[in-house]
Image (tube, rainbow, N blue to C red):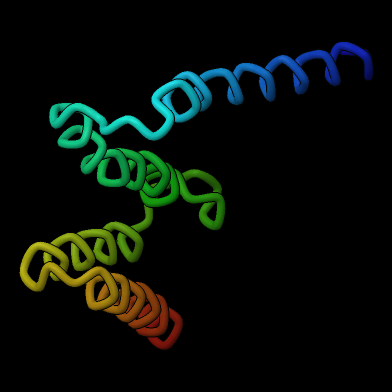
Length: 110
């Protein structure tokens, strides 16, 4: 691809992103949103976060794309603590502790 083609693609994606957001936020303006839209918006972060994290757990760059038991255990610990406590920081802390704990044990043993 040429530099011009790349910049055209970047500009088109920027304009598309703006139009998508404007259609939702700009056109609605100061009018109250319908309850069904508000109900669905509550789940946006819950839907996006697993999509961002799943590739990092299942195909991590650190292991060359191979599944890593330490990362899978950390993801499971994060999920379980999050469901149990309903506390985001506690879940993230548990996941980090399990990840670094398992990595540290593997380093000592191996």
